[in-house]
Length: 112
Image 1 (cartoon, helix red, strand yellow):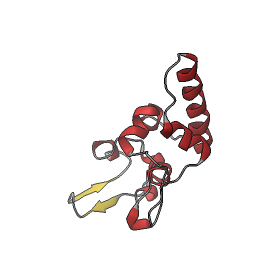
Image 2: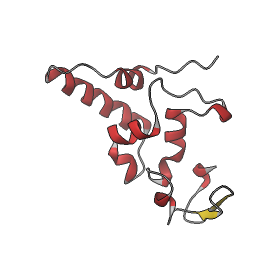
Image 3: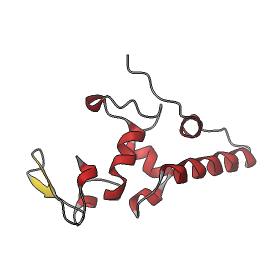
Image 4: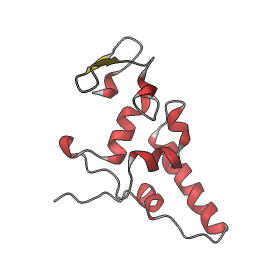
């Protein structure tokens, strides 16, 4: 439901007993409210039958792409940034990160 939040829409969270809107979203979540749908689709959610990207959780996603905290980000921007990060790791002779490969190549987790 967080993807519905906008300057005109707040959501009441029963577990927090609070209204959450664009003005206080960052108190409860570690990313910008306009990225709620992107984050959910990337990390997945069992209850919504969204598989998500293998090896990717919310903390890792925001750590790899801190711009998610500040502004609306598009999926193609994340994929391009993942390619750059992976290329930089290889250039520095560091081991490639499987999670970056999964973002680039669409490696989804299996929930059977």
